[in-house]
Length: 168
Image 1 (tube, one colour):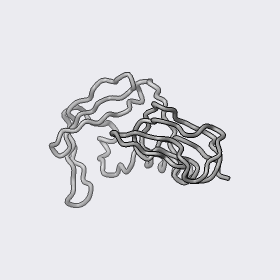
Image 2 (cartoon, rainbow, N blue to C red):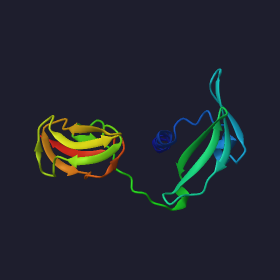
Image 3 (spheres, rainbow, N blue to C red):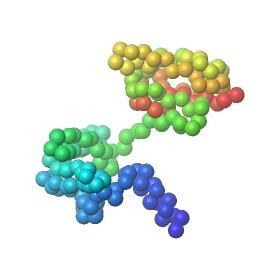
Image 4 (cartoon, rainbow, N blue to C red):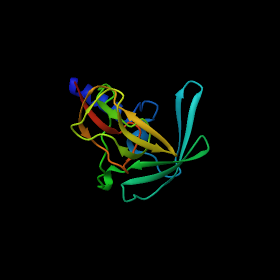
């Protein structure tokens, strides 16, 4: 059963723990106006009420309005059935020292390096701006720039890959 276990683990990493959701809701989903009580642990539960489901926007996202314990909330969900393909930005690999990610969301102001440049640990790679605060992303190791993913003006999210360095 290794394939079944691998499929289960992939589902768990994609959707999270679903054991708190009743089978009928899991299989058929909620309809507008439905209310669902989710028991998280003894004495702790959430009441979720689906208020509305919007239409798909040009990026393939749908706005879902719901109440969570009586408080109104909105979530934007990717509708995989829309057929809209969006390009995902690569993420930095946390366990690879030369895979440098954005430390915060923001805009790239300046790139200080180019592909093929030799860098030392601490050398500036990229300058980011977020909420009028500038941050310089420094090289975590000595090496050669093998890939520069961003350019000035690019919008980045926290963890997005900005530079790859081959360690020397």
